[in-house]
Figure 1: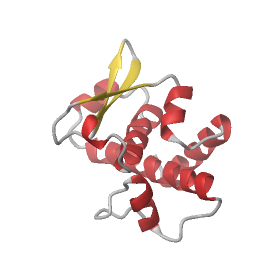
Figure 2 (figure 1 turned 90 degrees about the vertical axis):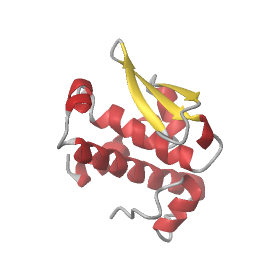
Figure 3 (figure 1 turned 120 degrees about the vertical axis):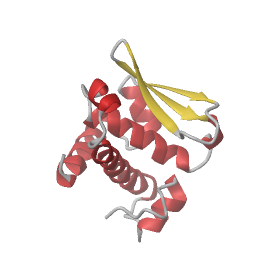
Figure 4 (figure 1 turned 120 degrees about the horizontal axis):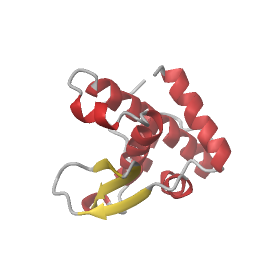
Length: 141
């Protein structure tokens, strides 16, 4: 999926549900979110129970800014890659593309959340890093 299409998708979702908060969006989309002890990694994982998505977040990121990026990333998988469950598990070469799409979704969604919460656009990417746990060492343009 093209970056412009991902941005358009996040804007449609935010307009429809009147929030960019990933926790509220998950609730409104009927996506269950559970916290579990997962060790150091993964930070989050999407699994399917009878085709219903369940996002599991690592307890160690609870109440930390990175919980927002992680949940937004997992929502990106649920929304952008619906129907690719079997493909995602068995894929070798497309895996990076799917992860990039989920990252793009998370960045777009959290940029909109920043505007929602602060009534202004962020001055730079690092404001999103501090607020929502976006990866500082992997700037996404």
